[in-house]
Image (cartoon, rainbow, N blue to C red; front, side, top):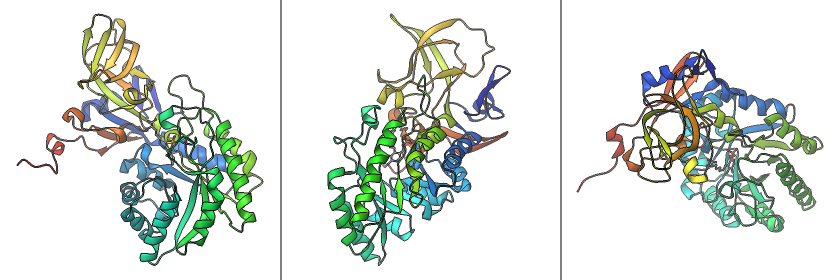
Length: 415
Ligand code: LLP
């Protein structure tokens, strides 16, 4: 459930009409709803109930400081994948003691920064990384808390680009090497082995692969206990899907309940979740204006002011995102359009074969754009990156200004 709905034919974010936002801040822009972010976060938090748990929001989904500060105020933890993300979390008021650091290529500088800030845990992806973290910790005279990411080899049944838990993927440690790698870790002087983690993919629409992965991890935790290695937390990663079109992913409470069928017998294990998309996707829209309608030989095109550089998911993953008008009272002829942007690429589309009643100047909202939207945007075709706006009831906060032309060449020089 989200807080984008029509009232008197006007599409609103909470209590603010999107047309008012377009008038004040221009288009294209991303608009987020605070109440939706909070509702989604609480859905996870409530579902986990009394079991010891921590929700570490996956910052990569949307790293805007305004968004992070809303989550920090709820007491959320954060899953980061770079020093840059850690800096953002700290700047937004996040607690470093609730930060887990994922990713296959952590640099020495990033490890040192995270150690200095006393993060909760490093999610380690390779034996070489264990050695590197141990060395950096030794230099800083610190103990590094670590968890090992296990590749459970389960099929997440999602898009191949966002499936991460199969043998063929670059992530994690093979299940059959896990005990050996844990033993290596336990012997390194400046590491504290505290956890185990996995992340099997993104946009999963069934609970079953998560439960399968959990079963494999719990079995491994028992095997480790026999070796004298105690695991204190189990991080199940992110990956819960959302409804873009006609998917029916489990609701966060159904997803958590499915995991709890196994976790109830393990009260000693703290459960960590790393949801990104499930919290942010439907908490944001991309607001765009129709520039021209054009008749092609075979197709009708609606050329809008947002493009693949602003929202790359349709071009990159053939992702389908709903595109809806911001004012349904306007009388327009209905037509089936490809919704395309101004970028010079055939792949520059936001949606294909959409039946809409629109005219130039009309506003459209691209739904489910709060996750992996702005964060994956670029300046391709020298297009300034768009503004981001956070709505809180009737208040509107500009949480990122639209880039200016001068911003386009910041740091560059002529010779
Ligand atoms: N934890 C780890 C270690 C991850 O790699 C990811 C996402 C998450 C958590 C959060 O997953 P989520 O709950 O958001 O599914 N750009 C793609 C998605 C890439 C996801 C990468 N990893 C897209 O637009 O669909």
